Image (tube, rainbow, N blue to C red; front, side, top):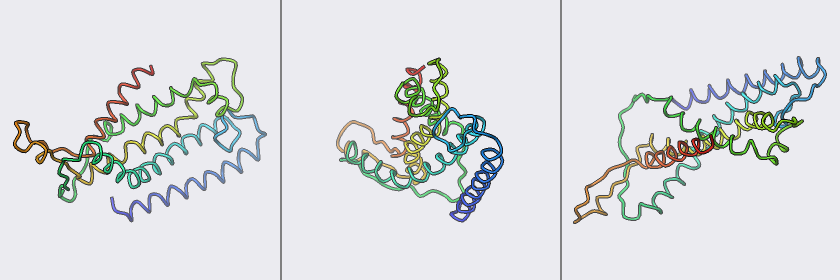
Length: 215
């Protein structure tokens, strides 16, 4: 996807969000009296409109987190890799053919989704977090946890996307490393791996195990 297309998509998204904000303000919060929403993270007072804006914030955070995390933390991930296991490794860049189409989008987003659910579950039962997030906590701790879980999804999704996007960017950039220098004159086989794939393996393992523990 070219930078021009990305700019058009982001601009259109911002315009749509602006229109929704105006319509929401004119048709809901001015026409109907405030009924008291369930969370403090949105500026609107109706329960259903808060759910709508949680979805809007959710999508916005994921888009911003993808580019912010990829461009900012991608070099940091590469630096960490070099310092942790890459002292005796050789690094290079694979030249890819233009027009390659990436498949497996579901599997690519599955593990960030698992990490999102894990983080939301972890914090949703915390009384301090419930007090911070909820507008009017219910008597039932389970209901409070569920409302907190829903309200936290945009935040935890952003954290998950920021964690995974640098690995995707490194993988897409074709950054490779090899142990040829390290195993020279040894019986160990030569290996060639991607830096992004190394981080993805760690993140997927953590997301998969942690969600089982959380449940």
